[in-house]
Length: 77
Image 1 (spheres, rainbow, N blue to C red):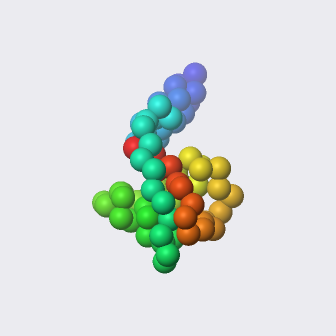
Image 2: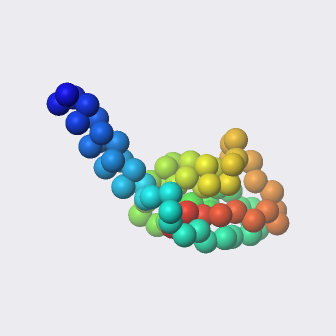
Image 3: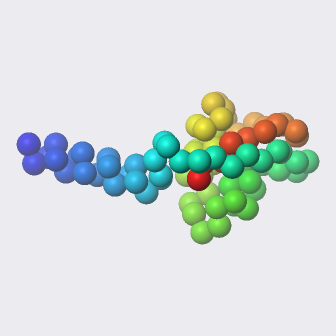
């Protein structure tokens, strides 16, 4: 039982660190030369860019880093 409690606590802390699913979104429009990496770097200074790229992919239902100019992307808060 102690192991289960530790696992639940760890999962809860990980979710809290990434933010809850009820956060507000900011919308950006992809510009020429933009990548998910550059967008994440610009909008989340100081955060782990790899995690933020994953967050953006998940929020937008992307299966990878491919984006197109003019595409609207939701950025989690």
